[in-house]
Length: 129
Image 1 (cartoon, rainbow, N blue to C red):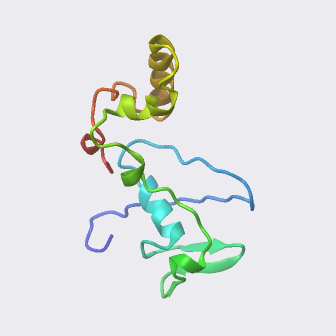
Image 2 (cartoon, rainbow, N blue to C red):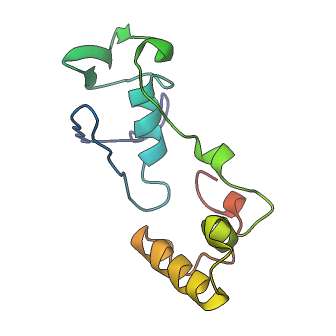
């Protein structure tokens, strides 16, 4: 971001073929959301470039509007229930499982994304919400 001491994202390369599904995992505050927002066209690119199907859609002096990029993005801000803890958000879709299975699955998923120990926190208490 302009005026910041260091870039929000540095040295990232991401490539997916049409129809592939990718997962972007990293610690809280490392730039995942910023990277996805630049690919979607919601943030300008200060350095480097973004190419979709070989066409340069983002970079210095070039920004194709988001609606012309045909990129889908689920916003984390609207995907979480702010009144539920992180653990309850993760368990939301598995509420019919026995409590022990829910707890084990929540622990497993939080460990996979580097958020172990965060089950009792609320979304607003995590970087990026």
